[in-house]
Length: 584
Image (tube, rainbow, N blue to C red; front, side, top):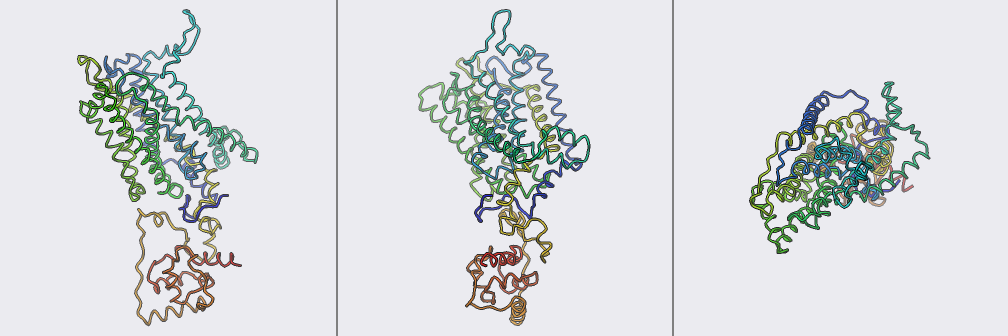
């Protein structure tokens, strides 16, 4: 177990034990699905079926049903493809890179982020397939022998690099996600009572026994997969950017695309994680495991990557002027002032301006503001892909070929269908899979759990049996600045009442003086000013504070008048008893 600094906010709030973690995360699986889940999955299933119908119509009729034309040969299909691939980036980053850097806060979000990656890449993969038009001859893209000799694909094409990069990314991500699920599937297997469910989770858990050898191999495989997946975070979207950067079209032919695309992918991926996890947090009552500190960390990543994207936009504009190439300069001028100026304005507003609000700690720790802004960011990133693709080709070298792109109902239907299929898969995942890694969360309980971190370390139920009516654990609402802490007013006493209350308090706690005083500032919640006030009341030692009960806390609140209920909430008695034991 690693020792954490006491000033770090705990990652697991409340008086949680190992059993509590298991119960809280498995509760949605063991309990009956709420009506809201059925309503949502029905709605998204309808969207998904509509999308499937549009795809069938498209394959039967041809891609002429899209709004593509002779000038704009790429439009919504590739826009949506790149957008979905970008969303899938955050899962691997959170899982692999943050695992290698031993960032424990990732454990609240990595499982759901990995699932998001798998489903997003599946949606992205649909678009190149249906863009082929005649999907039934899709095997032609493989190097197969045929009646004309060997039919080889063009390995010099970035489009083929995409196939290898994204398929590798999907394969490694899927294995990484599933390996992490195996111990949790075994936990569910041992708890469920339904024979069908027990059999299903037994198969999914691959006979996991939980012995030392199994855990050793689990850790080893996780690190190896993290090492393999880390380069993919940077390579996949770099290769996607080569689809454009290796061309000679003004607006695409630029070397800034690889780092710019990677930053944008992480930017949009983390925004989608925020959107999904804030919903899961509320629906499954997981506030103790995903609180505003996790949200703040992710918002910092969004703020940094959003700023990088903003610098990339400005760099593109500068280079278009500095290059001296009139076609390049016009391409960017046309983006900002041409027929698609509204898309460019939406892109700049959502991707450059909106993340800057997170410089304010109050805003980046606000759950409501984060949820709204995460949706705004993903809207902006969709417009970014649209601006790069459509506005760069709708006006080419021949003014007679200039045209305007209009999406058809098939364009819109396919996109909405992928959204529906994505959320259907995600809702099924949230219903039948643990949305947080049970085993991994247990590994940080004693180092980052609030109960253990604050020096108690006695687990759930300790305070109920030791004369304390209320748990000393500070609720999330009391810890985070954005939430309101309701503090009861302290009754003002007359001078006579103060004397009587003070005398009664010292009779229960025992007398002491400055000659044998302890350093009360070692108690969490006591500073120099409060220590001086305690001394004025007659409290100098840990032994006195260790005797405090509820009525003594109330008396003390009446006497000192500041920080009402703070002594009881921080459980000074338990802290003082611990300091006495340490000194002995």
